[in-house]
Amino acid sequence: MSPERAPLQHAIDRGEQEGGSVEFKERLTEELHLADGRLESLAAQLRHRVLSGDGEATYVIGVTDNGQISGIPARQFSESMDVLSLLADEAGAHIDTVETWGEDTTGQQGRLVGVATIRDGAAIADDDHIVVGTAGHVDHGKSTLVGSLVTGEPDDGEGGTRGFLDVQPHEVERGLSADLSYGVYGFDEEGPVRMNNPHRKGDRARIVEEADRLVSFVDTVGHEPWLRTTIRGLVGQKLDYGLLTIAADDGPTKTAREHLGILLATELPTIVVLTKVDLVTDEQLATVEQDVERLLREVGKTPLRVDQYGVETALEEISETVVPVVRTSAVTQEGLDTLDYLFERLPTTGTAVEDEQFQMYIDRTYNVTGVGAVASGTIKSGYVEAGDELLLGPMPDGSFRDVEVRSIEMHYHRVDEAVAGRIVGIALKGVREADVERGMALLPRDTNPIPVREFEAEVMVLNHPTRIDDGYEPVVHLETVSETAVFSPEDGQLLPGDRGTTSVRFKFQPHLVEEGQRFVFREGHSKGVGTVRSVTEGIEKH
Image (cartoon, rainbow, N blue to C red; front, side, top):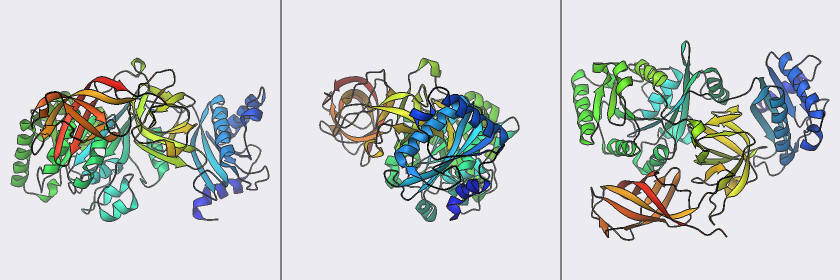
């Protein structure tokens, strides 16, 4: 058996034993195993297995009682996992991880077998969690800094710790990020809780489980051709703070200025981190700090040098107008303890979840064998639980589709519920992955959402070579929506630096748009920001 199937073989070798923690189930069905009396009996059996394993049990699905691998069709496997989740809940436990194997990777054909790890206690997401969006010019050490923070390991001077993030192999090989990546670490009573082996999904799950406070990083892209992806990372996530890296051996670049503009347009409290301070003299560092302070003042912000005023002052003063500046080196680890101190104590910036309705804009979609469609994103408001009935949309025709939450994961750790600000993957029942698109939203089924094709907005033109006339077609980045739209300025045109009102009409399909939402628009070298003032047109549902 291949190394990838070792967990399956290990469970089969251990076998079902009286007083053991392993249980074989060929299949679980709602009709048979959730019937009166049967549910209580199976939940008691599961509880016994968990207690026998000192708080952890292993259920092997798709295996006969004598340990023979039979496999079951993907649809039956999904139903079995739904039933197992209900049994675990009844027994006061939860499914922590699931691994599946089969003859295909689509989950549409073939037969599957899986190993589910079940742990004692309800899985509830943490209630102390901040999300930090990182930005900065390529080669300014943004991903390397985050990699060193989440592991506590110094960099090798070649950007080695950047490989600890959730990146693709070709990105590691080229040394350039091409999409959003994610990192996580946390804190408990004794200090930082970091990843021991960042390349293992289970290590990320351990952080979520053990830490009293979580810090999630949405690491964006520093290379100019992928500025659109960076905008998506900063506008499309529910971030608490922004972190802008500027290399001490290079200083503020055009890209850094653009990223700072995006962070400030989203009104995020932001920290500027000077990286690579080990590569410059004290005189060079002082010059770069002056350049950074000048840049911040030019956009109406007050810089606060942490080495001069102290970390406690930075904690008290950080806001939409005051920007702490921290000196760091991922190689010598200078300044990383300062960032730890800040991230452990910075308050969350969201509003109380009980006052809000659940809403999440989808950033990524993927298919998991035996589970089906998974929608990933940052919960914008409210909270969501496994089993919730939701609406997904709008679809291209303006309709919303009924779906159900099959399960929820945070950094590969399965939880029963999650609240605003959490980066999650939600497995959906009732829809194919091919029908779920970035920019769609999830919201409660008892709402009546309006698909919006056109809205009125107040905009500010940050940069444009000439002027914006009627018919101007930039890409609008609103939440996770990125689509070409047609502008019709109220006064006929907008010049660089102008503020004005314009109608904005999506060119291809409707989206969920609400008053007060902020957005960024971009076309070539033209950039601007805006706020939705009123929704002027819905779309007829077909």
